[in-house]
Amino acid sequence: MSGTPYIIVLCACIILIGLILWRRHLTTGMQEDPILVGETAREASQVLIGNGQTIGTRAEQDDYFASKATAAGTLAVLADGISGLANGRMASTLAVTTFLREYDEVQNYQQIPDYMEEAAYASNREIVQQLKGNHGGTTLAAVVMNGHHLYWGAVGDSIISVFRNNSFIPVNSMHTLGAVLNQKVLAGEMTREQADSSPQRKQLVNYLGYEAFDSMEIGDYPFVLRPGDKVLLCSDGIHDALTEVELEAILTSTDDPQDAADQIIDHIEQKNLKHQDNATVIIMQQG
Image (tube, rainbow, N blue to C red; front, side):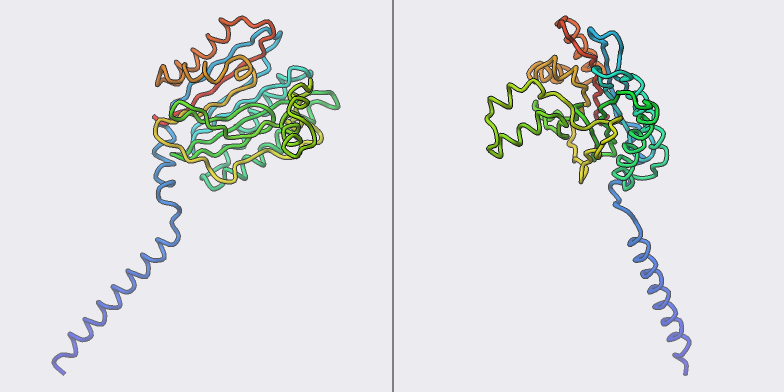
């Protein structure tokens, strides 16, 4: 009987340890990805952003852009109002402001893909309502940088690309007739010469403000960034005016995103092209 108290204490300790381990197991099971959670709060404010813009030879600046940092990551949005249609400025401004407004509801990185889709449909709906039957529309490219993960969505011909090791990695597709023609070439339905010579190659087949708007192209998985990567969002006024070689030379000459953006715009303006479109660039990089 003298050993009974010790046995009781020992049993109590075993039960207590078991409860602690059981609770720790439950807590661990409820945690989200620890790497992403840690980076979300810590690195959102460490993203460096540069931007630049020129009106070119157009009568109006139809490009619009903005960025916003929250606990879910740093958002950058660029919209290029369609110059060939009326109300391009209204469409691009409305699209960007809608994406900014909807982003306030995003609490964590897991919600970003759904946010992209919902914001695109909301933007398209609001633009169509504002047009009231008139023609108009805009392209749009949007990214959220969360630590080393890049979430993205795009519609139209604005480009998202990652500059890594002196070369560009394309992220999104071009929603133009040219892309459709390229598919026909691959399918053997037409020759490369026929596709390249088509005067309608640059015609958009999907954009915001289009009553037959299909959907926004959204990355199935986040693009994994590496240290030193630069993320570029460019309206077509950038990639129509400068070659990849020219852009590479600028991006390798400086580590400052704002300096790089300024140089890109300076190079375009110095070319003084006769039909220079509105041009806008956003450059993002982890600090």
